[in-house]
Image (cartoon, rainbow, N blue to C red; front, top):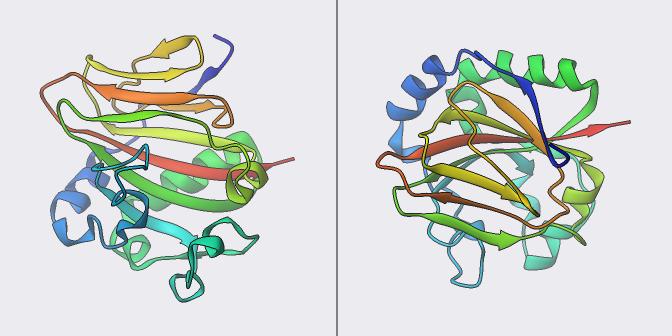
Length: 184
């Protein structure tokens, strides 16, 4: 494959799922990515774990300006995620941790085709890692002309500056932690 690269499998995601399921209030605490019908992420619940400090996001332009990422309250509540994040950063030799999101695509849901070119965060964070927390065989990730099913406990990188999408034709939610890191 030229766009997707598996970097880990067998990650201990069960404890992360237990913590997420015990805290449903974490979902959509910050609805900016998913509220607009024009967004490719419209209607896809998410949890912001790390991004630009909430108090700095005072206008739409602030989402695309250079910044230092901050941990959101979800980081303290999802402690089982910590060793996975830092272990994957070590694996790809990351020098900086940017945004961390957890997304949930319900059965029949999709993230519409889009690319992240022209956005400071996406371009400064040179590596995007998908960590599958819960998946099914009918949840397909695409990037340009390639498609892959990412199984629970696997981590994959891909170039989010290329056109990508996800469709969940399965019968259970697909949950993924998305780590944006800078590698040199």
